[in-house]
Length: 175
Length: 382
Image 1 (tube, each protein chain N blue to C red):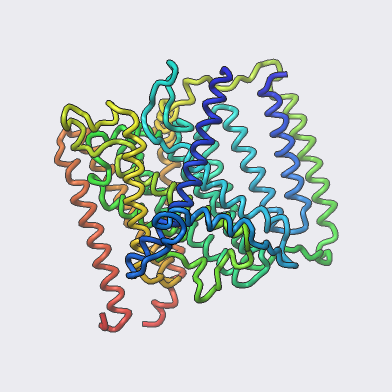
Image 2: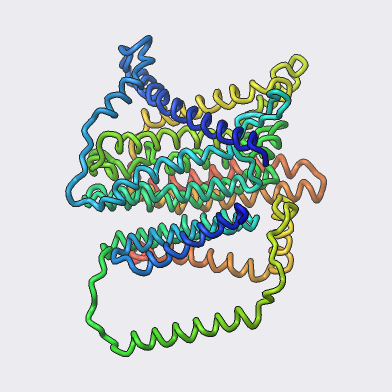
């Protein structure tokens, strides 16, 4: 057993148990914290695969920005503890179980049918794990996928301007 | 990988932690003495020569203080929060280069813990993680004041993180790399703060907000929130928050020095002075000394600001971050990138030298707009 395999097994244990912890904790803040732990574990997986750029982006975007906002909203609304609601839709739970089962069967089938199990998946070598690799990625992003990239950035800009306009509206109404 | 590699790593990490902890202890003394001078007092000067043993006395006091855990706190998170605050402030320093390298028994020892090729991105990710400690401390205390402090802290840090990221991007564009060692070496000819003074200024303002220092210390505004997020903490747990704040100050000054003020390199005009006798390339031990000097000067500015400026109101803090700093840093980033690109493509240095001019003009426009806005709101009283 190589050291890499041991690290992988321990990490996957952490990832899976934090995912379950997220699902089953009764306190929304604890759920959010478990999810943060899960995101950080995924980032470490990326590091193991020799992709520090994606690992750091994962931490910055998911653990650092999105989850902080989640936590912020949970705290602001005081929605920490889940009160068991009376079942509004009694058919919802069985339907959820059926759909989840279908998804699980499908994905297991696809994993065995489609993935080439006999090929060896190797981590990218040191050449990709450098500034040059980052430049190549940037070239593809700004060359081949320029239009989607720019559209995404415009979308974010519009969201930003919209937020400012929405919070400013009452002052405009004063005049 | 042989065992000496691991040994080198462990020793370097240990030494870095020791440097930061000692730095924290003496920064408190430095701040108290400097503040006292500015307020025409003497400051702590009893313990040891000129109060040099004061930090040790403080540490002993804090260790022996009684530690209270209020009855209805969320225990696990309450204990975890100080740890989550201190750890990012320590690991943040891992990628900051303290100097070049030296030979020890025929082995090249570099003066940084990790040489990440995505060093700047590492800084942003750790900085974004650092919010959790304070937010969770506020929430787990089960106290309205602490909660308000925690919420203020997280909103403020999220808002200012955007401008912080853009300032990192300015340094990346100018250094043409995400590696902090490369960025420092790109400044051997000229500091980035000279080429892009507005970027450096925005960075310094934003870092004040990120470490919750005056005038942006709304999360712990004493007059309205008792002590904000750490109201319920006492003894060593309080000391950890205190430690984290001061270590963050040191590390963020190290980062500011690295990104905009030449890092461990000498002043750019001293490179060829007296045959390069003051150059880092000649004597490796000058690197940490230069960095230390720069950090001390930057820390002095932080203390000076605390001594002179009143706290900014919370809604103004938010609108300053979103409506002034963010657009301005976007404009400055655009000017920098366009200037460098045009100078490269057209092979004309005039575009490069237009970067500082245009940036300063846009900063002046921003100041004029703030002034006009304030005057309109105060009905011409300013």
